[in-house]
Length: 469
Image (cartoon, rainbow, N blue to C red; front, side, top):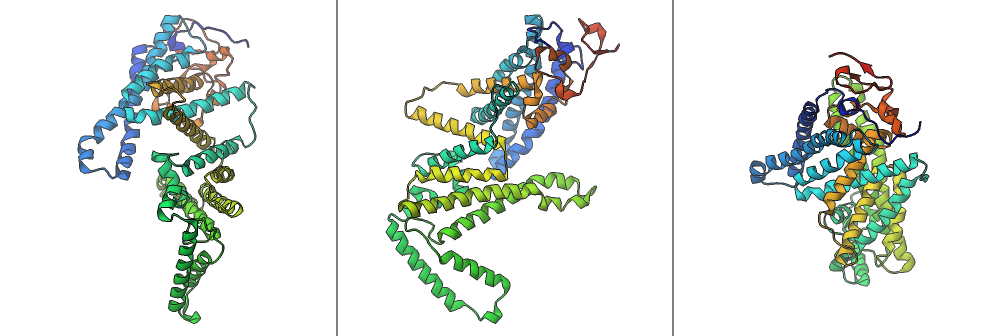
């Protein structure tokens, strides 16, 4: 079917099919968005406050205002969309392929982000820019403009990890949360400034390690009980300690307590455990609901495949990075920040254990932001005031365009979020009529056609089901 440039149906026939009144439909969306937004932000802000160890004054004076502030932002984003949806239809005399999604969401999103606190605009912008980029990529693939590369998300993560680790090893390369997160994951041993502060010379560090090794071995030999009194746990502990102290360690390596092999193994065990526990915690709410109805499913909380996949991803990332860094020190006989480019790229292959386009795209978007701001600091890129505001509005409008015209190209998690925010009303649009624009808008709605009151319709859409109210 050839794509048309405009359809002249009214907004009741296309958008708010549950109610012919534009005003009442906007009220319905706003009320639903307000309720859902409040339920989203209350636990979010409470958890954030606990993790940041906020004082009592924050809970008494700032917590509720901040919750209401963010709730107003999300409510405005949903409520204003339907308002501009109806306004544009009246101004244009119908719907174009861009007006029902992008055109209506652009002004609504711009006004909504102005309602939100400035401190949160950057984070929201990065998330939506990441989502919009992924949506545009899927649109291009659907239209045959781009051919996806096999394991493309892994390759993208490799390049992203390579540059991230280079900035991490560079002086003033990363700041804020990104630096703190990588320091937690990788460890402070790979930070040059920290290492230099602890030990200014590779030779001195080597001498220090030898002294520590001899002292520890003498202590162990003095306190070692008879073999017949050893328990299995004590034997394993002694074996691990022995492996950590014996073995090769390059003079420029700064993991003073371990050799290079145990340094990499310990990194894997630590982050594997953290990844496993994170995935288990994410499944606790659903497991708790099934505790009484389906108790047989509780063991899956601990033996789920995804738990081990995330653990293997994080653990192998750290161990590959640390192992490669140590190997390059041995081969080059120097500790160079350029090694991080190679080590980071090879560590990126760990995503084969836990493939995620979302993670790859988000980190890539954050990397672009980091490089852009570095360019501004260096005077190479211009600074645009309120750039985050405009970028958020455009990114959100792109996602709404997909949600209306080609939901198959939108990230499923975001589509579920839109359904939750609108109490399922986003799925009630008459996408059967929107198919004339050539985007196959109704593909995922199994031929759904809303029941319309003929007293408020202007024309008979194909396959429509009318009823008298």
